[in-house]
Image 1 (spheres, rainbow, N blue to C red):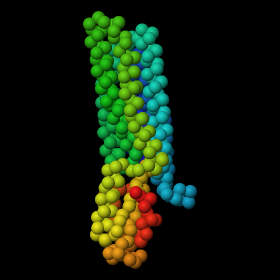
Image 2 (cartoon, rainbow, N blue to C red; image 1 turned 120 degrees about the horizontal axis):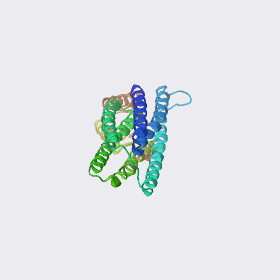
Image 3 (cartoon, rainbow, N blue to C red; image 1 turned 90 degrees about the horizontal axis):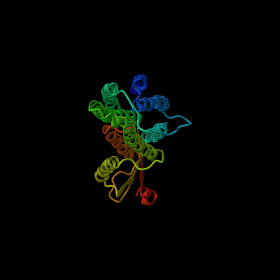
Amino acid sequence: MRALVFSMWASVVFVVVSLTWGLAAGSQMIVFDGLYSLVGIALSAVSVAAQRTVAKGADASYPWGRETWEPVAIVVRSTALGGLCVYGSVNAVREILHGGRAVSAVSALAYAITASLLSVLVALVLWHAGRSGSGLVRAEAAEWGGDAAFSLITLAGFGAAVALEAAGRDDIARYVDPALVIIVSVAYLWIPIRLFRSAFREILTMAAPHSVVTDVERLCDRVRADHDFAASFVRASTVGSRLDLELAFVVGPRTTERTVESFDAVRADIDAQLNARNYHHSTSVVFTANRHWVEWAR
């Protein structure tokens, strides 16, 4: 939660600096950067609200927990940011068709240096905080990381504009600012697109990442071999920071576990192994002598 609030306040600082600096320098690129962050502030508030909802946990209305609000918030966020990128690129094309835009290149270059340093600092803080597993914090870190990368592109562009003006080519330098808006806004699109795809998969309860599924399948294979179960099946999906698992074991002629108590011991062993992997999981473990009931997991 504190990481999301930190990101929101960092965005406030970024908006004030970029909008003020952009209007003073006459740069559409810097103003676009500020608008992107301004939208991010509103969406950070959505993320904070979603995180607070998730923290309330399960109840009668949400028997499986509230983690679905995480991917919903990310879908809203990525859609809004993607729309802003499209809007910015269209306006920049219009600027180019009208002869470009004169900006204070030295001032814009100073802004690019400042923005790069700020974005890197915030991205590193959020990346460290996101290692705990929150998809919302990872989404924030990804956006700030994108900000840092594209601030470096802006830095190179305004550096070129300063060089062009020094060489007396103001006519070419006029096109640098709108060209940067197009490059950055189009490049920014991969962040909301990637976040949208990942979050939408979770909303649809599609399969968990391949590495996670493989890890859980290996765990179940070891349990099956240790207890001589005839077969094992895994069904896994992720919803926000929660991993949902349905694990099924088929009791065979050689299986020694035949009582409820022995099955519970197997469940406890599986739970301990999942916890050791730091999975925030909701797991159902099924035992049956008829594989017909569990072949859904294939």
